[in-house]
Length: 172
Image (cartoon, rainbow, N blue to C red):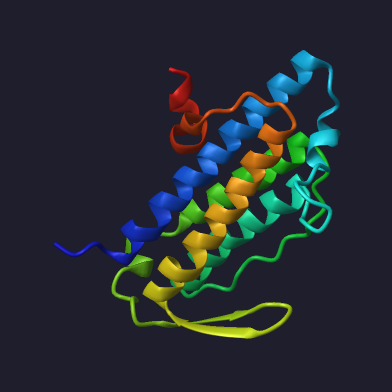
């Protein structure tokens, strides 16, 4: 049995966004316990030339909403990148989850050969839909989620691999 494009993309994206929300929630609780202003973490980065946590979350959300929109033939929603607090970043994740969840399997399945055009600041990219999901969206989503996780771990938040892969279920 072949896997449908929807099943290869949307449920995975939803899970990673939900797990990111859990990681953010656990990180906020830890920062509060340690008396750390969460904006310190929001502005933290792993290296001087890397984006801070806030931008990592924004890009992860952009990958998710861009995928859902492009696969379903919608315009990609344009959102300002102005989140500066825990609450604003979690709201961004929630808004992304809501958008991604609005896309139905019937909007995507059968579109594996659809041409997907992505314009980046430096170039324009063309993909078949299936290649877009497997070779662009999933690697980028995972890179920015992993970098977010690593920024928080680097700053002393006691996260585990299970927080990353299982989200809130890791706490049970």
